[in-house]
Image 1 (cartoon, rainbow, N blue to C red):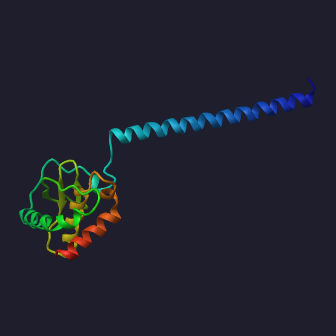
Image 2 (image 1 turned 45 degrees about the vertical axis):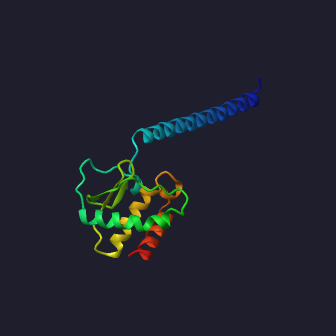
Image 3 (image 1 turned 90 degrees about the vertical axis):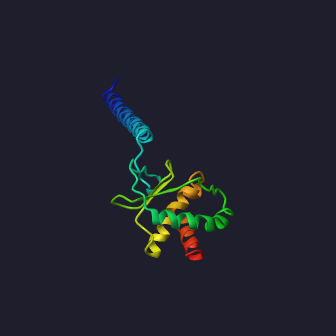
Amino acid sequence: MTHRQDAQCSETRAVVHRAVWRADRRVGVMVAAAVVGAFALLHPLPAVAHEAVGPAHCQPLPAVQAWLDLHIVKWDAILATEPGYERPSSVTVCAAPPGRPFADNRANRIFVRGIETVDQQITVAHEYVHIAFQHYPSGHNEGYVEHTARRLIAEFP
């Protein structure tokens, strides 16, 4: 083997080693991503408000509960025409802990502040829509949920 052939062979080996190293690194990244993904499935974070799990304790808001119960009957006619609507057998209204209002789909509970302002009423309707459409894609679409909540409050203040 000549000196030139030896140099080419060494250069080829170096290229192959770099390619193998990069492939090993990519595989390592893919494995790490799979582990992180599996961990996220086992221990989900409440990344979206409507998919949060509420605290074990619920401080009831009777005035908001009565308001919601009355409005659900009115809203039912509109929502029944929407694909995916399932009127929940019951929804419990709880005082929201510090942070943003949210719906706990697993327990059919909404955590809100009140109904004194139109914005608060829209929030109650918004969280209800999340629960009423929880088994359908539109129930996880914030744009659809917000638009529907605003429409319900506009038609039934």
